[in-house]
Image (cartoon, rainbow over all chains, first blue to last red; front, side):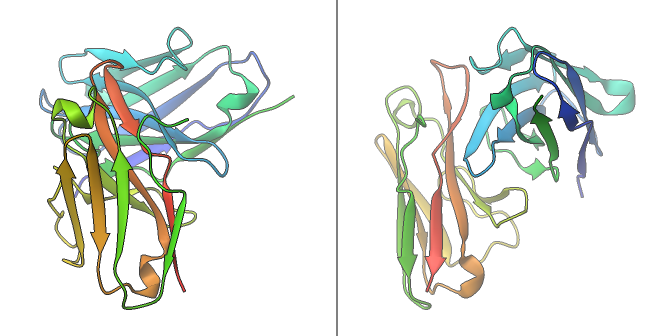
Length: 118
Length: 111
């Protein structure tokens, strides 16, 4: 069974930075991808970023240039570096793994809450 | 404003059937990218419910089914049970955005 665990959320002031971590059990190979999705309070799901097995990355327009996704294969961990945080970045951030390019998000973590507030 | 359009809410009585529609465009569903559906109960992470338009992951009851046609897709739930009360999201890939898009979510109430 694949396990996905996020960590690193918390309270941060506007303009600050935060790094989220996503630990994924099981092999992360060329056919997998790890992605970040967020959900603002009372709102729907918003896709943010993806990193593929060949280290190709993509970002939603809303976070392009502010967020950076990266991975450490030795630790089976993916990171989301979030800079220039804004109040509207407040959300639960989920990490998920997919096993098919352009495919579904098969395994999800429990989420980590990020609150951007002064 | 979500790229994929879903009704905000639906309600049905137990035992009834409900269909939740998801409308996209030529750069996502209409471009032949698969549609996936997620179920999210309050306070929990989303759970993959249907993938590849109409495939149920192991453990998902056959009361849940999906379909896709043109630029739209739908999720069908028969024999509604109280435990089906949740938010349902459709998802597809969009080539213009080089990423995934979600519907705004549909809140299902089982009266």
